[in-house]
Length: 283
Image 1 (cartoon, helix red, strand yellow):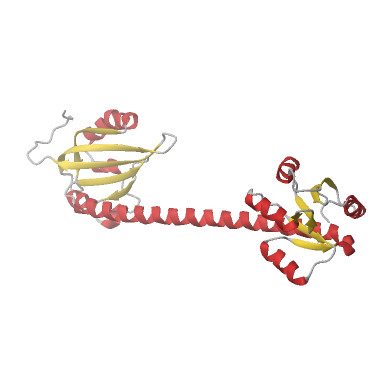
Image 2 (tube, rainbow, N blue to C red; image 1 turned 45 degrees about the horizontal axis):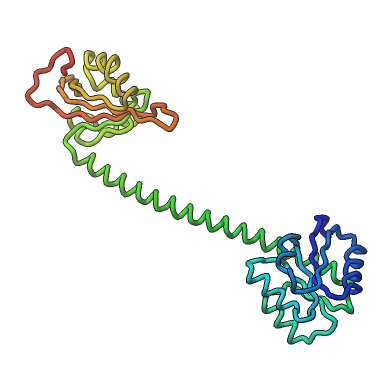
């Protein structure tokens, strides 16, 4: 039997019967606090004031039976475990009471069973509460998983669309880590510089794809500006694998995490067709 203290509301108009109930509860060793009420008058107010963990109600009170009490609780939105106590009750009436939602019943001729009924009802309600909480948590998790799946689906479709766009452009598009090791170069960029797929796989340094003067300018001016402001634009040059310098209009973007730390860089470079290569940046 649980050691948690129960707050037991007894609805009974015969003091002697209420005393027997209290005696049986006391003899069981159950820790409890009880409040005895005997009529319809102020029933709901008394229940609200006492805040019971369970209600024990006599089947028949003057002008007010246990079903009336139970329905009054329902009407007030009070879901409190409810045990019916009766002197004589037919099986049909008991079944009807249970259908209405009453948790259990005890005959007055067998009040020794009352503590066990109270304990069983409260344990059953506690198990049901835990089950409801678990089901609600499961429902929330399912909704969260569904939401995440929808997000992933959206991101996948957006990624596929972005990849289509990047692979369709004639501009050089590249992504590198903060160590400047290439993570991605689009098809047009590879073609522009003579890069094969095998050369790109984690060993190609972005710094090997630009002439010295452009690298110095990017290191001294472009990267610090992009880190501070998020994006830099200017004119530099790319360097093909056969050492051909290709003047470009270039954009460098610094991508940061929630802490404001740079996680990677991306760049877009468009060839300046009629430009003459020089050893200093323009613009």
